[in-house]
Image: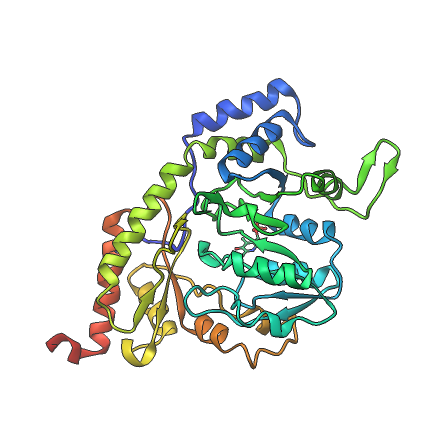
Length: 376
Ligand SMILES: *Cc1c(COP(=O)(O)O)cnc(C)c1O
């Protein structure tokens, strides 16, 4: 049997380098609560992301939760149904009502032409997601936010290192959240970052992530525990020296996919966006059943026979989770994408030969299903 290929594989740096880094933890005798490695990592992240300020968290989900709390949002929040559970859970857990906006077919991101009609007197914010590392129209969102006096928090979980015309993507909106989970482009085992332009937010965020404590005898807000520890910071620091090389490898794999899939009818993928330095976080394809000859679910299953494991990402839509009772009737693009999208394997260690094997397998599966194609 051929080698198993999973949809993702976390990067691990050479173990000696990690050990060398964590020896510092023993020397410092400091495990968590703003330790020296935490400080060092926070500075490294600010530089790498090209943002003014950053605050580190134990994971991306709690970072997003704290972002919402720190901006004192009320009432309704406009967001996308085509995202990971985390985005919508943080909104509802903070007592806010998510109002779902449909997505664009070209980027899978919130449709900027449908946001305004959803704004009411109760709307306090927009929480868009840069899905798969493809950027939302940040300029248009900025305009709408200014016009209606709304806050903007970007779920930038997928966009570590992405830039728009040389500007760090985390410098748009009031706050951006980056996830440093093991399966993301860049990780600190688990971890999260909030980036923001308003330096005054820093103190508030630090308070929220440490039980609301502001002094030895003072607790100011109902906070939680969302601090990053020194082991996470150590992994993050070591991984920072590999991130550019990692993204370069992902880029090569992505281009190999595009080159080898471009002639398949009924299969579509996303291209690079203009002016954007991408991080090549994911390689999603859309299967148009009537042209491709089989649906997304069958392709997903059939690839497993060849030891290739893809993911229906994001499926189901957040609006269709068992725990929620939302109406998704008008979210036509989101429904279409969610039903027909398949995320192919992509990670820095994925070899070009493996990409070719995946592409050839997709072609052979399609031919088997549609024998007529062989003659054309
Ligand atoms: C991964 C992810 C999160 C949550 O990040 P964690 O670090 O895993 O808590 C939030 N939103 C999106 C879109 C994600 O992909």
